[in-house]
Image (cartoon, rainbow, N blue to C red):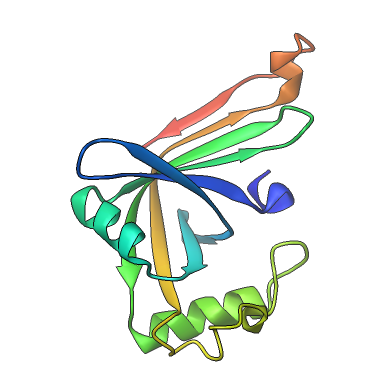
Length: 146
């Protein structure tokens, strides 16, 4: 569902416990039974401060048909060139509609510029809520927790 919806509302929490959401574009990867999310993003002062205070994010996907899924995750910054190149290539070579050329962002001329960083997402709780459940048409809400 996440790779069909593509864009997600990602919420962080500031030092006063107030949430802030923004729209980001995660890509998810299964590796030896482990789900990991990767977000190519600008390491803004606000994001850095929020994640320094609380290294957890809520990643929420929604469709107009009312399909939703949420990943509650630990988020860590990656500034090393190897990880940034790996994630850059994941997006550059990713399947539609998830893949895109990162250079469409004007400040991202390469994966090693200061304006480009990576957030690694490690989910501790996943929830998939199909619209069929919401509309009383059957199905089930799926929840996984570490």
